[in-house]
Image 1 (cartoon, helix red, strand yellow):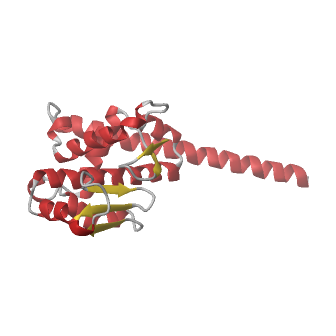
Image 2 (image 1 turned 90 degrees about the vertical axis):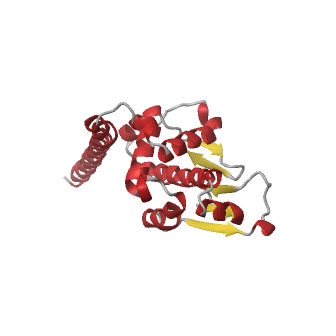
Image 3 (image 1 turned 180 degrees about the horizontal axis):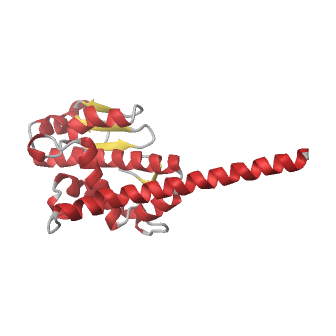
Length: 210
């Protein structure tokens, strides 16, 4: 975990994922957030209905174009400190009407939010093995965090990029079963470590009272 400047906003902790980590993130984002109509990923639906199910602290705001306080080139952004997506009204309306650029713009910010949820989840479970598998340890690519988000957004919107050439069994094994096994093994190791530490503490107490 390192620190990056996200969307020109405040400094915030962010994750740098491995190539497989980006694919797994995209796979699970589609799986947990639903694929929308005709198998598509619908960022507005995800933002308004799915993310709040996983993160009660999340919020989004639509700001009227005439009241937009930021650069004309900044059409939407995710503020990690406030855990909030802010969207210019014409961009939001354009996405609702299916404008591809506006859909991609909002999808990019939704992916930022998903990355933030993953980061907080990884920190909460404190599972070193799972983090090591998913994330890069000491990466110089943090300056390219926006490029990583673009990559994941493209994978989420166009999953054929990471599904093409793989059988159904390969997809399930690589993106579903393997990550779950790594996650469960990591949790078991963390739990065992906690149990051993608790036993050591009990032995220390017994030694003092003997």
